[in-house]
Every structure is written in C-alpha cells, then in structure tokens.
Picture 1 (cartoon, rainbow, N blue to C red):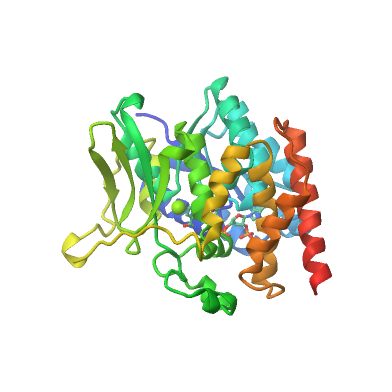
Picture 2 (spheres, helix red, strand yellow):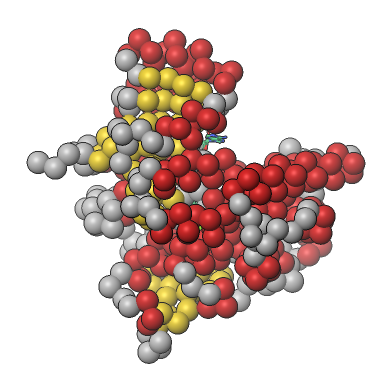
Length: 388
Ligand code: NDP
Ligand code: MG
C-alpha cells in the first residue's frame, strides 16, 4: 500500500483552502493533512484542525495564538503563529505537497521556502508568480520541487499541454469571464459599488480575487502567471472573453489545432487534478452537460473599459520589479475599495501613480522585492490618505 500524501494548506479557511479540504475528505485513502495555516479566522481553523487532525497548525495573526493553543495543544497538535513560523514550516518533513491558497504577497516567502525544501507545490497564490516569477523560475531549476497550477486557466493549459512537445506550441489562449461589469459603460463603471463588484456571475471566490476579476487585473496576472509557468513569450499569450466560463483555456499548436479543456466553473476540479499530481481521480461531483449550454460565446477584451489587462504586457516587457509594484499597489487599492475609501476606477489610477513613482530595478534580488513591496504599499496608502 502506498502511503497517503501529506498536504499543507496555506490559507485553509479561504475559498480555495476550504475546497481543498473537500477534496482531501473525498479521498481519505489518498491524502491526509500535515499542516493548516490561516490568517485570523481562528474559529474555523480550530474546527478544521479538530476534523482533519494535522500535526501542525499555524495562524498568521499572533493575537489568536493563545486561543488556538488552548483548543489544539491538548489534542497533541503543535501550534504556532506569525509569518516567520509559516515560512519555516515549509521545511517540515511531515509535508509532501503545499497548497498555496493564501492571498497576495504573503504567499511569496513560504513558496520560496517550499521550493528550496523540494516540496511539490499546488499553486493557487498567483501573486507569487506575478511578484517574482523570474526568481521562482530560477529557483525551480535547482530544486526537486515542482509546481502544478490550481488556477483554472493554468490547470486547463497544463492539461492541454500534456503529451505535447514544447516546440509545437504556438499560442496560449486564456479565457476570461469578463467579470460582473463586462457590459457596463465607462460612466456606469464610475459609480459601481462594492456589492456590485463582489457579485461575480460565474465563480464564488475570495473578495480580493473577485475585485481583481471585476477590474480584469486578474487576467493580467494570469497572463504573467502563464508566462512563468509555461515559459511562453508574452506575445504568444492572449486573453479572450468567454462569459459562460465553460472552456477554461486553450492551446493553439503550430499545425493549427486548438485544444481546450472544458468543465463546470468549479474549482474542485483543478484542485483535484493538482492534488492527484496529474493522475485523474474519479469523482461523483456534478459533471458538465453540454446540452445545458446552447451557446458558448467569445469576444475580444475591451481594453478601453478594462485597461488593467494591458498591464500584463507592460509588466513583462519592462520586467524587473514592475509587476511587484503593480501587485502591491493593487493590494492596497483593492483593500481601500472594499472599505469604500476609493471608487472602482481609482484602483487603476493608484497602480499607475505607483508605477510612475517607485524606482525601477532591472534585476531585483529577493530583498529588492521585499523593499519594493513595502515602499509601494506605503506610497499607495499615502495616495489614498491624502485623497480622503
Ligand atoms: P480567500 O480570501 O478566500 O482566502 C485567503 C486565505 O488566506 C484565508 O484562509 C486567509 O485566512 C488566509 N490568509 C490571509 N492572509 C494571510 C497571511 N498573511 N498569512 C497566512 N494566511 C493568510 O482567498 P481565495 O481562496 O479566493 O484565494 C486564495 C489564492 O488563490 C489567491 O491568490 C487567489 O488569487 C487564488 N485563486 C483563487 C481562486 C478562487 O476560486 N477562489 C481561483 C484561482 C486562484 P483568514 O480566513 O483567517 O483570513
Ligand atoms: Mg483563474
């Protein structure tokens, strides 16, 4: 009998994290939980730990350490708190696979350590590749670690590329739902509310990525993510709006063939594929019935109303710390939008002002990323504070 794969989930209390636990529960003979990590939702983290009995549980926010420890230490679970403990835990021997399902820049250091520790990584936290794709790619070259994408588009591309020679690939075609504002005019976009922006038509996701979908910066991030995951030149990666979210992405080959991966808009599928290590795991979950979808439609993204999508090509052609600046400014701007401190269209303005202000570094080291992230956040915050 082969031993069960030991899974660490960074961000177990979030949208991807809870769905990952669904998959672990679906295949008790294949997977067990080695480590659970959350930000501050201590109550749910405790419930999850009691149900899945990992050896280790860590909460990022130190204020909840005592509560976590009181609940779990008597059960023999090792408890810790803080970003340092999370990053260090990537070296634990009790872990085979790390699911990076935290949101934003906080995923970077743990992912780097997981690569150095030679762990298999199921990568949901796309911001890691956005911020430091070049660094991550170079670390992977000297490690036994491997990344399998969880993001639905990249999982689709990964599946389309299976068995194909890399020099036969012509183009990656990343599908985009278009988000909740696909049909809104520029004038309407000026007045959209947080509630409108959180109301995604097809996907139920965490708040930050849902806002990124509304601005379509999420698609820019996915173009950057694809560039680093698959080693494809930016000019050979394009996005197409496909409002039904049934085709999760496509690959065009040099002979004109186009392969697509289809499925319901449900993240359990790419998570299942990543955890199964590309072995397909049988499931009784609902499957796609094509007759339910009489029309699948496609349109070019409107970069006039959704200019954020072009930031991908700008970031990749300028390189260096450019995407790190975009990501940090966006994290601050999205948080401010969610707190109703700025309007929807100001998210892009804050990113552009930050790009103009924060010094460009052509070949950043890890410390340069850390400093760029901190300086950009501070500057973006000051823009928001000065405005109010
Ligand atoms: P959520 O906001 O739903 O969940 C985020 C998780 O990260 C929570 O468990 C949260 O804990 C935890 N967390 C937050 N901050 C920290 C921190 N500093 N240290 C450790 N843990 C932290 O996000 P999603 O699940 O939607 O997204 C996670 C990642 O996956 C993102 O990078 C997103 O872009 C990507 N992704 C998500 C998809 C989706 O369908 N949701 C699809 C494709 C990609 P707490 O609950 O305590 O705050
Ligand atoms: Mg996606």
